[in-house]
View 1: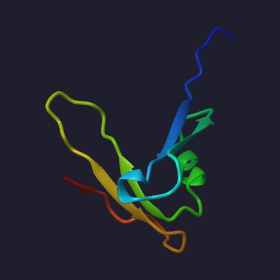
View 2: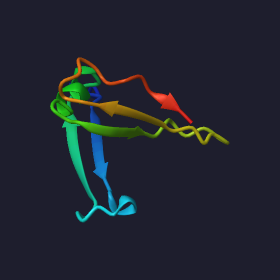
View 3: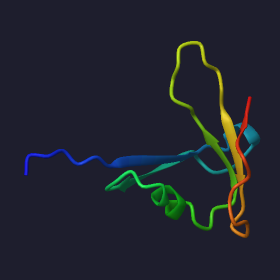
Length: 82
């Protein structure tokens, strides 16, 4: 008792409007009671598409990463930095 528990709140956002998508933008928030790597892996099970990741903000940094995923692949392709 009296100890702080550390979890994570994941936000998965989608906005296809810049590419002419007909659906409105949306976001799903998923809570994980810990920081284990298998949590986001489980969240994204069956997902196919492109994931974009925002790196931790660092002064002067403009880096982004995109990862292509497929449900039939054992793992996502390696991230590519721009």
